[in-house]
Length: 548
Image (cartoon, rainbow, N blue to C red; front, side, top):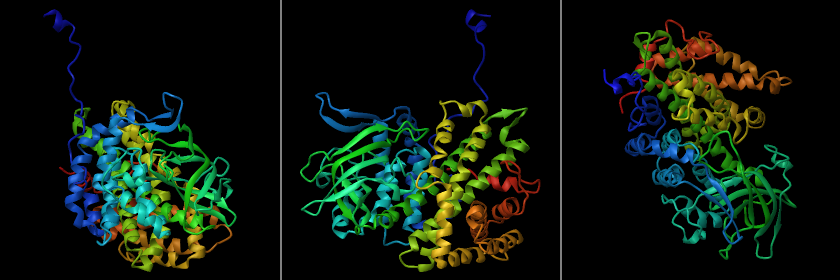
């Protein structure tokens, strides 16, 4: 035996290869079916093309963008205040791809086609699996459009720029740029979700513009070209568009105090800022700031659903991929009965989340033309945002466990997915806020309850467990005195029933019946991997990650 052979301690085998160069759209049968079912099938070619990019080039870019966090450059070398954020080239490339394929504007650029919001939701779903941090500015750019349309003059100037497919990070006046991004500044230290507690003030100037003095505790994202912000005038809390540059081309009086040191979302910069007489223009009417910016929040909450369901998908895909290659105790993991139960359960949960997300996207799409769909969108967005975002962290952790110790080290994607998983349950209103929004909608807009139950009743008779759940839900709102206290239970069961109704109408009996019996019928434990022995595991796994 040679010296070299004596020191050969082991050969590397029984390891899964990296998951790369796959099509994250074509391999996702549940997503493809949901897109077609909800009216976005005409975008199949676009989604397939982007799926190859998201499962190919963007995978490596996602690693690089998160390994190299953004840095605040408050001053230039001469001491001039610049408040700039420095990003790794990978971040800029991901932003370029995101805008090229329309994460920020696909729905608006195809507004004449029914299902445009469904197709755009699928674009975002694919993008977010590869790199989540860039989804923040792209989401806010997408969702700013309805708020800006409250002021046609602003919309005429800004919408062509924020609907451009060109990513242009240069510091230039909006008129000179090929494309712009839009952020948001709502919350302050003393108030958080209670924006009525804000203290930032806006002062009207002789030319009709405003100067804003105050602060924002979370200002996302400070690299954008403009932001929608809330500030008080005499008439009450109002919404303003605050550009990065003043009309004369000078820097606006926005001072970045620091970047947030966040649990996850590392590629994206979130900041704390002060406004020292910052130039801004009114959006909508004075005193109507909350209702104006809620036009934006409604869409960003849908994107929270998209973000969480897509993280669940990517975590499930990583677990499935690992299990197809890794052997333990003489078998591939995917052939081990208990692991099959876990993987099938993860796939089932992910499909249900995706189905509800795309159904809400269809309601948003149809809202301008259909009052019933508009009412459904208002209440189902809060229900879905509450539930799907809550389900994401435990699912990602379970998928992480499928990889064992390899799922806990930063060489792979699972730690990044795990850090990202809690974000959407907090962003744009935490769980309690969503439950209170459901109660508010039911109490003040009876049409939302009618639309909600119409959706549930459309599947009545298809499964006994859903029929029993609908009966319970019809009675759940009766005790108004304790309804707020019970609202988490009510909203949770509404979400599960909605997912059941959507899956039943989708027509795959294996998926729908297993969902109803496990989530509504009690044939499931508190953990994943507790499906019954009669569950069609083979069928669930066969559709979970197809060749693509």
